[in-house]
Image (tube, rainbow over the protein chains, first blue to last red):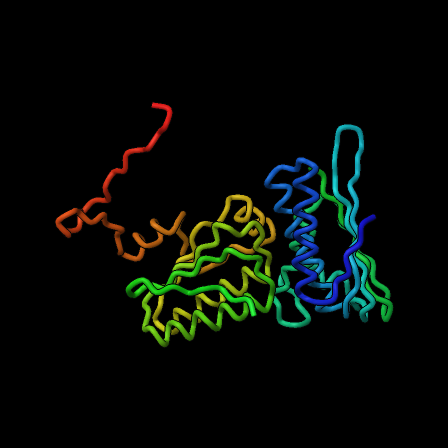
Length: 129
Length: 140
């Protein structure tokens, strides 16, 4: 898996540009490419805003004729105390609009989130073309 | 520091975003637009996002806020050139940008604001209707 460290807002741009470029190189449709890159942007921002930094790992998946992109976001922050609440539209702990996590989930085909209090958050997404 | 140029064309400010918009650049742009509205007494702002392949919830929120703030300063914002894939992605995420005025491109945006791009005749008078440009085609 390729890895991108996420420490600041510039790394958010790096992460979403990488997702866009990989999707483009794998022949993703413009729609699928835009969705995965936007989801990556949301999740990478969460890593540095809420998670005190961390990293994204990504790889290309092949299943029969299907091509997908798998991304994993890992931070070392305080974790999310209430995941169900965080996944609700409009919920935000720091006055963003609260579209980040629930928005990203709607843009991808598979979304898993795991949080351990005090040890950080791990989010895994898969987008098939 | 990187910045995005804000051009003044009569009473309209034209902002064409041609670069990757990281978060603080977006926030700076918001400031720049509001100060320019005050300094130039602009009545309208056209924000061209034709070149933007990704508009996430943060950028969408900044654009939406800028529109509201400009409106408080009596300037109207028209967002132009949003790509279809960007539109669909924002709607998927549940961001419908309420209150934002849009147009398909800069020319349509100016038209919406009441300004027409007129071709100027050789004698210096404006032609009322935009001149039909003949397509230059090397094949013929």
